[in-house]
Structure formats: structure tokens, C-alpha cells
Length: 251
Ligand code: ADP
Image 1 (spheres, protein in one colour):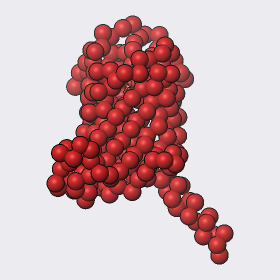
Image 2 (image 1 turned 90 degrees about the vertical axis):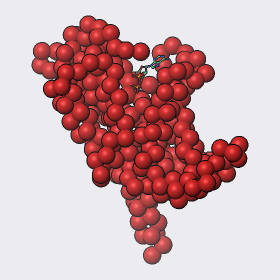
Image 3 (image 1 turned 60 degrees about the horizontal axis):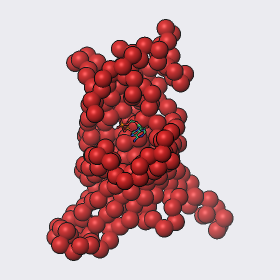
């Protein structure tokens, strides 16, 4: 579904403030929690503005059907899904074309970060369930899934951190929300492995000229770095924060 470039002029005022009160280069508030689902091997919950997204990881585990196993590595399987109550009007729970596409790009964004060769003949399942959506859910889902994979103890080279920039009312903006996505002229979601600065996802819906693209890319990269800090903090808080307290009690 390409962008039509609707009338988004009311979405940024003369002072450069957006409809939700943000500056054009400002992220929405982000909160990440780790290890919240008892039955999953790893899990994370992310609030990215009004997005509320759960990520759960199962595995490495035996593959069914057996012939889909690979002799030299684990098979990463990802499912992105929006729950029926995640949108204003009930969403059909059956997987849409969009969800199938996002499941694919989520797998492609995460795969380079994982040492799948350490787990031959197994599968790792990643479930991204959007409980409430507000634009930018693929990026928030990828970031949560990467934390959930770390929580599951899957060997990885780096965390994957994602964030989008776009164009609204003729201006480049960081972190496009649902209204801006619908009314705006472009959406550029990207995911990176922060330590090596490698891009694992880059999509562009709409049109940007070269100058706008470079600005949007550089803002989205800085958004990814901020997400990375929060992912690290969440994991450190979960593992080292709690462990330190346990040690204090034991001494
Ligand atoms: P992303 O969530 O990664 O930005 P899109 O750009 O495709 O993905 O979608 C933008 C937003 O549109 C979603 O976050 C969601 O809020 C809204 N949306 C997507 N699909 C539906 C749907 N079937 N019904 C209502 N809203 C939807």
C-alpha cells in the first residue's frame, strides 16, 4: 500500500510542534520490560508511545516437521500478529498480507544478529503480538523480539534496535505515529545492530528526495541508538539488578 501523501499540514504547527506535542526530532516515550511470560523461554514487553507489544521466544527446540530442520543451523521462525483489539475497529484475527510481510522482514532483521549455527537441527520461534497499535509497530516489535531472544539465552552477536523516521507536512520527522503514518508522505523504518552499525532492515514507503532521505536515515539511526540504550538497561536491570539484590540478601 503506497503512500498517497494526504494533507498533513495540520500535524505540525508553526513552532514545529507535532499533534502529540513532540518536536520533529523527538521520539515517543519508550519502556521495555524483560522476562514477563512464565511459559516462554524468553519474553519482553515494549511500550513505544501508544504501541503495546509482547514478544515471546520458544527454543531452540525440536523441529516439526522434521524435514524442515537444517543440518548446520537453527531455523528462525517469526510471527508478527495484531490482536483483534489492537486497533480502533476490531481487526480480523486471520493473518493479513501486511502481517505476513512484517513477519518476513522481522525474521530478516533479527537473523544476522543470531548465532544460529550454534543450534543445528533445531528451531527458534519468535512471536510478536501487538496488543495496541499506533504506527511504528514493526520497529517496536523487532526491538522487543531481540530483547526476548537475549532473555531466552540465544547466542547473539548484538541486539537489534529499530526505529522509523518519515516525512509529515513536508518535513522530516523522527518516529512516525499512526496519524502521521496515514496522513504523511513517507515512512522509513530501519533496524540496526548498534555495535557494528550494520543495517538489518530498511524499508521506504512513500517518497523522499536525497537530502530528506539522508536526514531521515540519520535521525532514524539516532533513534535506534536510543532504543539500544533502553534495551541494554532493561536487560541489565533484569539480570544484574536483581542478582545484586539477591546477593545482598544472601550475605
Ligand atoms: P507499522 O506499524 O510498522 O508502522 P504500517 O506502516 O503498515 O506498519 O502500519 C501503520 C499503522 O497502521 C499500524 O501501526 C497500525 O496502527 C495501523 N494499522 C495497520 N493495519 C491496520 C488494520 N488492519 N486496522 C487498523 N489499523 C491498522
